[in-house]
Image (cartoon, rainbow, N blue to C red; front, side):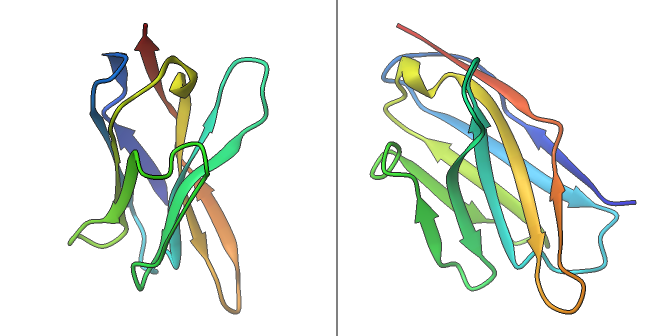
Amino acid sequence: QVQLVESGGGLVQAGGSHTLSCAASGSTFTCNLMGWYRQAPGKQRELVARISSRNSATYANSVKDRFTVSRGNAKNTVFLQMNNLKPDDTAVYYCNCDVMGFSPRSYWGQGTQVTVSS
């Protein structure tokens, strides 16, 4: 059974920095894409950043130049370094793993709350 486990959520002051971590346990496959999505109250879930197994990254315009997504040395791990946080970044952040190929599938973490105070 595959599980994505996120860690690092919490309360941060505006202008501060914070790092989220995610690791997939129980997996024998490689996540071709790993990334972070977020959902603020009353809003749809949106892509924040994602990175391929070849370390090609994509960012939402709202976080570009402030957030950095990276993959860890351990298999199927991903991090999100968040700098210059803003109150608008307050949301539940979800880790995602996409497996491509013959049997494509997607896995999600349970979500971790990030709250940015002004």
